[in-house]
Length: 124
Image 1 (cartoon, rainbow, N blue to C red):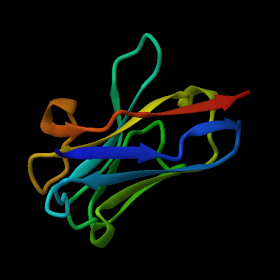
Image 2 (cartoon, rainbow, N blue to C red):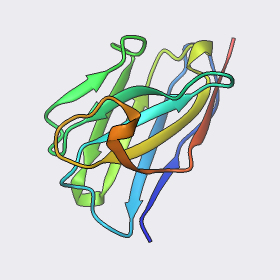
Image 3 (cartoon, rainbow, N blue to C red):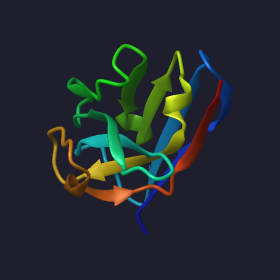
Image 4 (cartoon, helix red, strand yellow):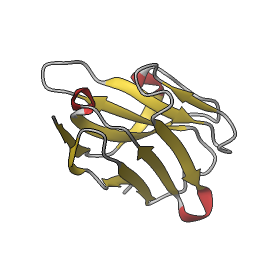
């Protein structure tokens, strides 16, 4: 069984930081691109950041550029999202996902495996 397991979410004040982790179990994802998405109540799921299989190419949504950093450690089958300068509008359930191929994918339909999500709440 293939699983993506997120952790690191929680409650933080505006301006604070959190680091999300996504561990892949059941198979390796070191040869595919991965991404972080989020979904706030009443809104559609949106991409936050994505990273190529090797980690040398990254993509960020405009709303998080300069504040969030995506990275991966293929030896540990783990992806990270460092979130700094958090804002109340960052409040959402954050999901990690693994795509079909090596290059970055932006649309959610390009991702094959999804985690269960971790809640991030930023208080004002």
